[in-house]
Length: 316
Image 1 (tube, one colour):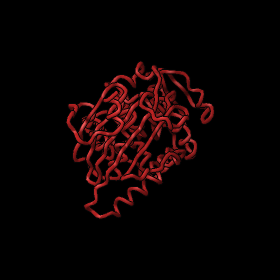
Image 2 (cartoon, helix red, strand yellow; image 1 turned 60 degrees about the horizontal axis):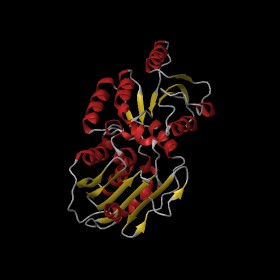
Image 3 (cartoon, helix red, strand yellow; image 1 turned 90 degrees about the vertical axis):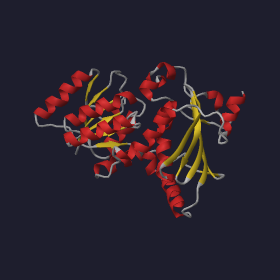
Image 4 (cartoon, rainbow, N blue to C red; image 1 turned 120 degrees about the horizontal axis):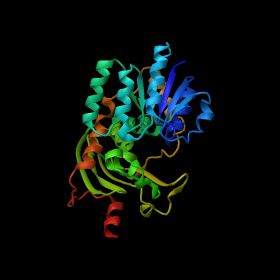
């Protein structure tokens, strides 16, 4: 049984990590979050220690190690801009990491983390769960089986409505979240890289605090993409779930169906990590570089590869 800590226990994604730790037969020793709305812990690990101050969490982790109870993993679900320092804290204490996406916000941070791994002999594992989704794996196999010179035409659309709170939180600050394309889109860019290969061209057609759109060329695909948290962009057939959401990946007129199958992907990710097969720092580089360019690139205004939804936004 492995001993875990979790940073960011009050966050949206934390319950999936708590469930994965439990489902893989391991134990959460301690959790930390500056917010104390962490009652979900009682469902999984009611006896775990909890702190709202990082200094108290640090002291507990280090005292435990001194007493022969060193942690095996620290799971990180904190805000995006804190991933790098929290990862470095774990590595400096010789503790392996499991970190939510985006792993970090820049390729410079990736290089720094590789240096820390090498120096402190601990490993960083990242959650790239879409790579484990059966529909994504099947599509990757289809692309690999196609003629080598075949380049697929793809439209990626992801709309997920967020309230006014979003822009007032850290998620609405580009320096902290990486912007909307990073915060809600980085796993899609990793998925596209996983299926279609390396990025060869990257255009940005529109970018504001709620919406981003552009065009990407991969080795095996031409992708028009549109991401938004603005409810005004939702089509009438948007799904009513925990929030209004519309997700579509269309490959040459054929819709990729992957609305289901997400329930256990974090648990599967943990199983792979515990078996020594987790995704590491370099596995994140293409997607992190992609969103880095999207965040900083000049807007292209004369492209012939505009996403259909962007045309509606511009015309309105």
